[in-house]
Amino acid sequence: MVDRKQKRIEWVDIARGIAIICMVAGHTSIPEVLSKYIWSFHMPLFFVVSGLFFNPDKLGSFKVFIKRRLRTLIIPYWFFTFIVMTGYWGTEYFKPIQIIEGWTGYALWFVPVLFCAELVFYPISKLKREWLTLTVIFLTAIGYILSESHIRLYFKLDVVPFAIFFIAFGYLFKNSIFNTRPNLLIATSIGLITIVLSIFLPKLDMAKNDFGWIILNLSNALLGIYFIFSVSKYLSLANKIWPIRFIDYFGRNSLFVMAFSQLFNYWIIVGLSILGIGSFFGLCLRYIILFSAIYIAANLLTHYTPALVGKINRTHANDTK
Image (cartoon, rainbow, N blue to C red):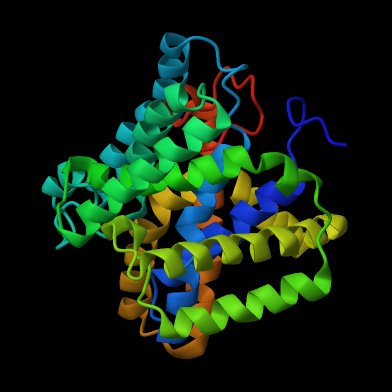
């Protein structure tokens, strides 16, 4: 069995890579059917992964835990926020009020929500399993009330209760998730079920705290995450193949994709439009340029400003951002 404390687990990085690539696709013009399927699981997956590696016995005191999350989440968040706002200067997307509102439609909303959700979950994780479960159910009910009442909080903190639900799921079922070997037939069947359900269910939009038919949408999200986890475990067996390494890399650097994909994509579209490049070739070229630019930015920032992007004193290799 892989020691989760000492080395990265490839299939988890691949799962995050699939989800983050889906996120990029989900923010572009794609068929509604595909969009609804992607949105049904891609952001919940990141919170479940956070729960997989959430270990209160290894996190130290609450004070130490907060300091670590400030270094790995909040400092990068404000650093990336500055870069993005600077990059949007002079465009219709330069709206500083979005920072307080929680980034309307921009993926960086995930970071403060994860930070607050983990802080709330820290003391909850100390409870006995039955009390932990009841507390999470209670918080999920609060999240549903906020959703149905259309109550919006600064920094999208209204999303925190549902984020805690997914973190708790990963935390409670981590042993089963890590130790269960995927069954191709079952995984494929579940994948098809989630695609069909996504067509008929209201769109799950976690950034807007919109979960539609809550029980069915949450269930479909978890089934979708199971399918991606199963696929990722199979793909990890072929980790030497270039496309798998590509997915793995961006899974390990998913925060950079959240920070830069939409900003870079905007300026790439502007540039290609000026050059008169469109159609299918333009779309392919845009994605090649986009991921190349993110790769370059991630490497440069990690090398020259590691403290500002959370790449310092990483004692836990699988710490989720």
